[in-house]
Length: 301
Image 1: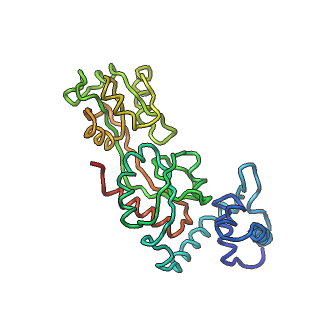
Image 2: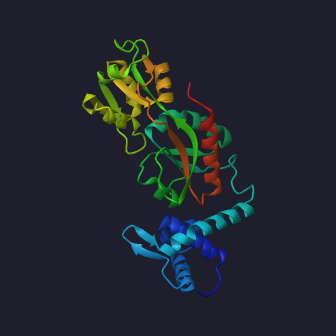
Image 3: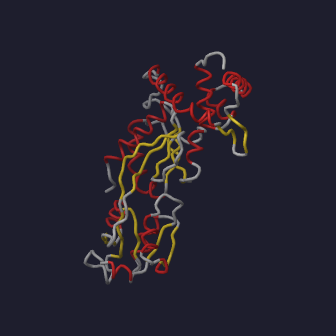
């Protein structure tokens, strides 16, 4: 082991670890790919081993690299914060596009609050909402192809960092004239006799389906929807029930002929979290701040 690490080598190592790609690291550092490859070779000589091995899904960090990453990542973040100037990102003058990944639940409940806040704080910026893909958002964040992901599904990935801002529980929605739910309550026995619609989830909101399975009511599911957006229209015109996040249920009830009913057996609440890559840019950190500040304090009416 010879020589010392300079800042360029530390930054290259951290970005290679996060992006798993020489190409993506070169783009983020605004360098050529040969320059990044040269720095990688210097790191190999410095530590006497390959810190990254090429695999089918990109660069795979070695055990030594996994040990080194947390300390170098935190040191680099501290240095960047220390030297970051207040003018690095100016929301008032930016014309930047922000790419945010949301579930359909997030689009329904968060975008109507977020867009006015963005217009006030960054009038020249614009937002691109992308459909949440739980298995992909961490890779997209660290590759720089996504600025923020808002989800309750934990990525279990040390390359990204999350800030929980909202705790969500669930309720039933029923047609306002539902013959068995007019009193705004159902006991477990009555609940078991009802029919249900569910919303397909790839991992973000699995609680409702797990409850039905636990109670042996899977055969009482009459329809699976692709989105929460269609749930109030189906429920308001039939006698089926749907289990949805409570504050979405309350919004639906104000806009449709629906009742909100407590579940006879509660589902564990989930934490909605805003995720960025750990080496987020000043613009990405600002966007995460805006999301957390706006959505933690406001509700749709």
